[in-house]
Amino acid sequence: MFEYVTKISEFCLCSEGNTVTRLRALTNHARAGVDLFPPCVGERIRSRSRDAHRVRSVSGCSKLTPQKGRCGKMATEKQKHEGRVKIGHYILGDTLGVGTFGKVKVGQHELTKHQVAVKILNRQKIRSLDVVGKIRREIQNLKLFRHPHIIKLYQVISTPTDIFMVMEYVSGGELFDYICKNGKLEEKESRRLFQQIISAVDYCHRHMVVHRDLKPENVLLDAHMNAKIADFGLSNMMSDGEFLRTSCGSPNYAAPEVISGRLYAGPEVDIWSSGVILYALLCGTLPFDDDHVPTLFKKICDGIFFTPQYLNPSVVSLLKHMLQVDPMKRATIKEIREDDWFKQDLPKYLFPEDPSYSNNMIDDEALKEVCEKFECTEEEVLSCIYSRNHQDPLAVAYHLIIDNRRIMSEAKDFYLASSPPDNFLDDVAGIIKPHPERLPIFVAEPPPRSRHTLDELNPQKSKHQGVRRAKWHLGIRSQSRPNDIMTEVCRAMKQLDYEWKVVNPYYLRVRRKNPITGMQTKMSLQLYQVDSRTYLLDFRSIDDDMLETKSGTATPLRSGSVGNHRATVKSDAEGADVSATSSTVQPTKTAEGSLGSSLTSSVDSSGGADSTPAPRPGSHTIEFFEMCANLIKLLAR
Image (cartoon, rainbow, N blue to C red; front, side, top):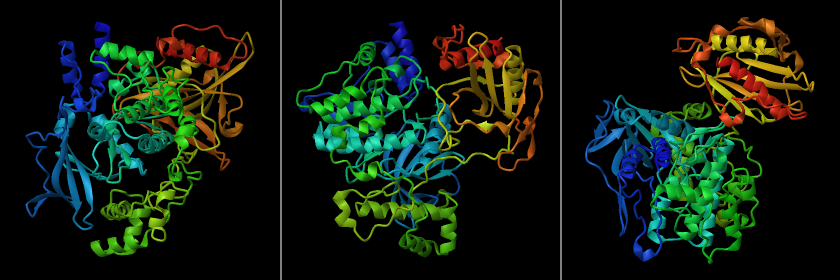
């Protein structure tokens, strides 16, 4: 029992702050769940991830209950406008709900008169609950996204006491509450919502973001019963090949590898959670549920769930594929899209064949309306739009007008669309223009070779098209100075008789010849800055058939080049020698001590960090792991 409680504690501390209260209740042998469906429905669905402010009883699901108190003193720029609070260009209205660290209020743009949802986050509460990272992730992710089924973030307004997130307003409430009120949905309606959810999840994954907390509570409904994914607070940015280990999300919706603490890549846990949501849509209950949390965990890890006989055999097959315990056998987005049941009545805009639409289209009517209301010129508005400064009041007003016109006309967001859904072509023919908020595909331009600074660990700096992704990825973290890290790495490689090339002071290509097989094993070492104090040394396998930088891009260095902080790199574009000094980047804080004392290996013990496996002829993967293990063990001494 103690082992399960330990896992639950680790699990809940990564979730919302109110889960601590539930953990205490669990350790006191209190009941860990609440009934969410009224008995008249005849079915129940349980959830242990509801916020502390949500009050529910056996008789049904109640609305959000406002709490007493205030969200902190407002800053000086907020004014009273006819008895109502004003922040920026927004007049705040009624409270939609109260969360752990703030309120959500309905707001109205004072000029365009369009409604928004304003999430008010109290800075003091955020710090006290240690959720600064959660809020920062949510803001960063929502700023990136422009998808018809993901809640939009229009603007962030900061004051000394509060943070105001101006977001898209949806009036339909949570999918969870809708299921509570209406029970299971018809198969056709379930499929329509599920298609929208999968489209949004696919969009997140293609932009290297894993939600990690998908559940009906985080799926909102607009006035036309369209799904909108919200709450990206637990989401993680994915780097190519990176494995995650944090137990996040809600137990009932969490994948087996999450609750067991095993490594997972990310996308597969969202697939599992999406499968649980699909089951809830079709059945009105959860596939895995139990009052006793250890029993619940066992059910999830066994992957056995009841399938009602009224379910279509095709959807049962899809559910079993998505709720596969082995993540390697679990359905992928591609396999879901190819499923016959899923493809029925699938709107074309959800998965466009050509997502490379130009984003330079401007809505002249919206542009004119902004100019009239703000008494500015078209050039000023266009400058804000083209500069992609989405926080500028002119750009915010422009996008508000665009989105509300789209909603009022029941038109879908065309940011990715190759063609609109068939069911509303007649209604909007002749009045719809391509949506100007279509974002280009997130493909980072290759950095100039003359600029050798320490990269941040940022998924936007992803591989450009045409380069194959590395198959394996390992890494170690350190709080030493970047120069010291690379110096120690070079010393260790010298002792191991590795050969390497210096692409820049923080990026090396390394190779090792197996004395027995004679096989050359290659990998790359890249140092990333994770935060102001922490750095990640990334190990990546390089296959012989992978596209590499031309052989003339770096001067080869034998192991005797340790301590050389100045590298000469030849530019492919210019053919000129460029000098770069690694001291161009200095961390704000560094940890005292040697590299060995501050390194923490991220290689799981099962991955071979503690033992050197015997190389198998022709096995590049085994050779790569052995190469990494030898280097990591030497660095950790």
